[in-house]
Amino acid sequence: AVVYDGLVFQADFSGYVHCLDAATGKHYWTHDMEAALWGSPMVANGRLYIGDEDGDVEILAAGRELRHIATHNAGSPIYSSPVMANGTLYVMCRDKLFAIGSSQ
Image (cartoon, rainbow, N blue to C red; front, side, top):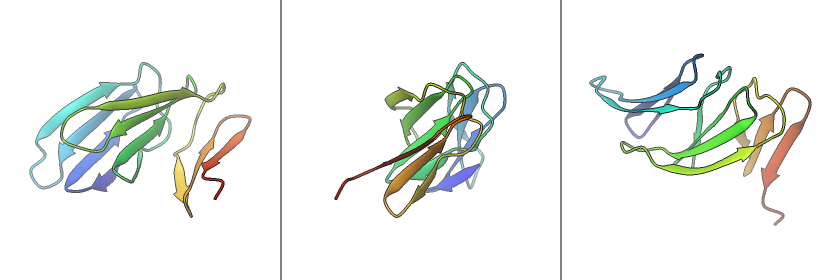
């Protein structure tokens, strides 16, 4: 799970990402990734990133309302958690590693 701005974002193996209030446990939303989730979600800059076994990286708003921002397919299953370091997003797939960042 990841905690951000008073919210808990939790993924489960069956392919669902849940958003709960960190203080009360109140359920805000559930998002169906439609594939198994092996890694944990990660939040950076108000966005939640999670990869699934189909190779999709979902980007959702990290808030009380479910808002889909984008989906990108990496072409290979993702069995790990996305990582943000020094302004670069790292996504490790079964057979490749993506480093996504600014060229500046």
